[in-house]
Structures are given as structure tokens and as C-alpha cells.
Image (cartoon, rainbow, N blue to C red; front, top):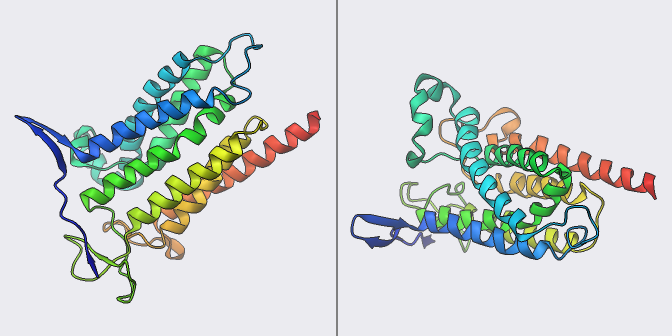
Length: 271
């Protein structure tokens, strides 16, 4: 068995100011998004200057700003609605207590979708084209977030077979070895999804195909990872023995497959 390293969650202490590792992973996520977003501008159709309104670095800056707002607001509201609706209905002011923890990826995704609706309308750009632009830039941010989860020793996995070579004992989770599910999610939802999506998006694709591939890929990888991740203590496993995370992934998988199929058929119909 491996003991989870006791990493101080505070990376740097400057007098009364404490810089947490988790905050640094968020900064890394946003920095990677911006860097990759500027490189996406080299791919078609974003690299074309023959359009009425060419894409620019300023667009990436504005998308990042709106995306941050969508992630934070949507992630928090999504967590309150999906995971503890009764509690936050009784304590509505605690919805704003983000320092207590509690963020939902699926809620953050909805927040980003709405933020990009506003961006696309204000800039008069096709919404799906905007989503195709940013989709390959998201997985590295997810990977950074899982690094933060691992450093904090949170969102650990289910109890593993004692013979598992990388079984890990987490503080606060008992003495039994568990799956380091944060690492699994880092590898699947982060690195692997990024590699597959970036390579897929490098070539010209029909509008909506890249977005559909992201929804489908993330949904499948997250669904698999949930088999190794400990369900939320106050929810446990739900219907059919699936976790809340898995149930939230099902509409993502269906929507992604449907969007990719629709975009492909629409492209073939125009050919």
C-alpha cells in the first residue's frame, strides 16, 4: 500500500496571504486554455482571414473571461442543485460560501455553455463554431483540476483490492487502500481526451463535430472513472447502482453522439 503524501495545501505563505495549490491549479488551467486557444486560431476555419469577421487573440481573451465566470457560477450552482438541493434550499445564503468547497463539473459546463451563448450573440458568431474552437482547450484544465484534488487528498476512490500495487491510503478515508481515482481522471478526462480531441480537431471538421466529440469523450471517460471513485457520502449509489456523476454523464453522452451525428449528416447533405 502507498500512503498519500501529506502535502501542505498552502503552496506559499506571504504574511497574511496564503497561496493554495488548488488556486494555482486553477491559474494553470486558465493559462493553458489561453495558450491552446491562441494556437487553435491556426486551425481551420478559425485561421481563415477571408471571413467578414476574422478571429483574433482578443476573442480568446474575452472567451476566457466569460468562461471563468461560467465555470465558477455554474459549477457552484450546479453542485447546490445536483448534490445538495434540500440543504441549500434551507440555507440559501451558503450558496455563496464557495470557500467551503463544492463545485460540479456538469454545472460548470452548463455555465460555460450559457456564457458562450452570450459571446456568440454579442459577436454575431455561430454558437457551435465557438464551442468547436474551445472544446479541445478544455481537457488540460480538467487535468489541472484533478492535480489539485490529488494534492488536497480529496475525491478519493473506492476501496481497492489489497493486492493493487498503486492502492493508496488517504487521510480521513480509513486504513484501507483505495483507488487513486483523481489520477485515473487526470489521465482519462485530462491527458487522453486532450490528445484525442486535439488531433481530431487539427483537421477541418463540420461545425459541431468537435463539440460533439468532446461531450461524448468526456461523458464516456467520466462514466468509466466513476466506477473507481467513491460516491458522495450523502448520496451513495443511486438507481441501477450508478453514482450521481454517472447519471449526469448519460445525457452528455447522448447529446454528444447526437450532435456529432447531426453535424456529420448535415455536412454530407451539403457535399
